[in-house]
Amino acid sequence: MNRGMDDAEPIADFATTPPLLFARVLDGKGGARPAGWEEVQHWRPHDHEPVLWLHLDRTAPGVREWLADRFDIPAPTIELLTSEATRPRAFHEGHALVATLRGINFNPGAEPEDMVSMQLWANGHVVLTLRRRQLQTPKLVRDALDNGRGPVDAGGLVTTITEHLIDRMSETIIELNAEIDRLDDEECELPASEVISAIAGIRRSCLALKRHMSPQHEALENIARDAPAWFERHDRRQIVETIDRLRRFLDDIDISKESALVLQDDMRARAAAQTQQTQYLLTIVAGIFLPLTFITGLLGINVGDIPLAEAGSHGFWIIVAICGGIFGAELLIARKLKWF
Image (cartoon, rainbow, N blue to C red; front, side, top):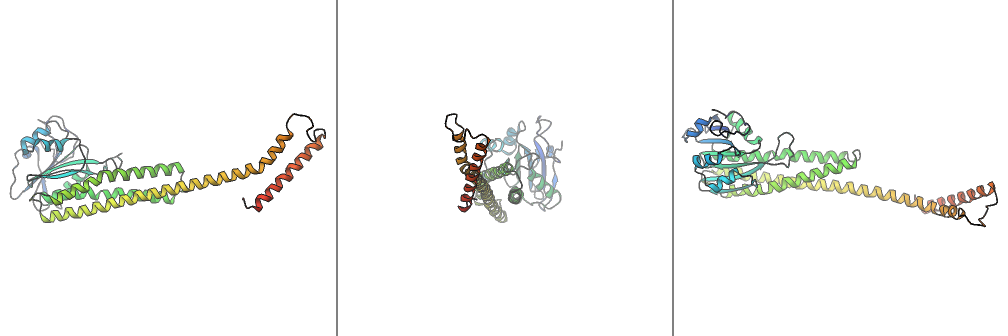
C-alpha cells in the first residue's frame, strides 16, 4: 500500500493502514522518488539513494513500537517524538539529531499564534518528521523534491525544513504590520471599540509568537553548535543564517508589539482629551446656571413674604428679566476669562 502521495488524516489500523503520510527517497541531486509502506519496511541505504525521508502521523496507534523496532530509538527519545510536549528544543544523541520545532499555523480558521509542532529525528540516512496537525512546510519541501529543486542529503533536508518553518513567519509579521498601519490610518473613522479590540488581538499575537519562537532560537543554536558529524559545514552555515533570520523576525515582532502599544496609548490619550473637554464644557454650563438655579430655588420656596409674589404677571417678567441679565453678565465674564 502506497500512502506516499498525500498528507492524509490519521490512520487507525497499523496492520493495514500505517502511520505514513508520505515518504521520499532522495536521489542526491535535488530530486526524490515516492516510496510506499512496503519499501519503507525493508529499505536500506544505498550509495545512489542515500536518504529516506518519512513524514509520519505521531498519533497513529503503534507508531511508538514501530519506531523502537525499526530504528532502535531509545524510549525517552520516542516519548519526546510522540508526546504533546511541544516546547522547541534540539539535542545530539549518538549519531542522531533530535528536535522539536514549531511553525505558524496556516490551516483554515487558525490564528497565527496557534502554533503547530513538528518532531524531527535524523541519523544521516533516515530523516523522520512527525506531526499531529497538518503542517504546510513538509508539503512545500516534498513538492520541491518532486520538482528536482530540493535538498540533496539529510543535513540539507533538515536545514531546508527549518528554513521553511522560519521563513513563513515573515508572512504573519507582514500581516500584523499591515493591520497596524490600517488601524493607524483609519483610527478616526473606525469605532473606538473596534480599534481597541484589534490592537489587543495584535498584541496577543505578538506575545504568543515571541513566547513560542524564542525557545526555537535556542534550539537552532543547539543544532548549529552540537550537530552530528554527518551535518556538513554548509549545513551549519545555513542553520546560522536561519538563526539570524529568526533573530530579525523576533526583533520585528518586538517592533510590531511596540507599534501596537503606541497606537493604543494614542487612542487612550485622544479618548482622555475628549473626555476632559466634555467635562470642561459641562463645568462651564453648570457654573453659569448655578446662580440662576439658586435664584429660582429661593423664589420657589413656599413661605410668606416672597418678593414679587403679589405682583401678578409683572412679577414673573421681572424675575425673567433679572435672570436674563444675570445670564448675560455671566456669559460676558466667561468670555472675558476665555473659558470658551
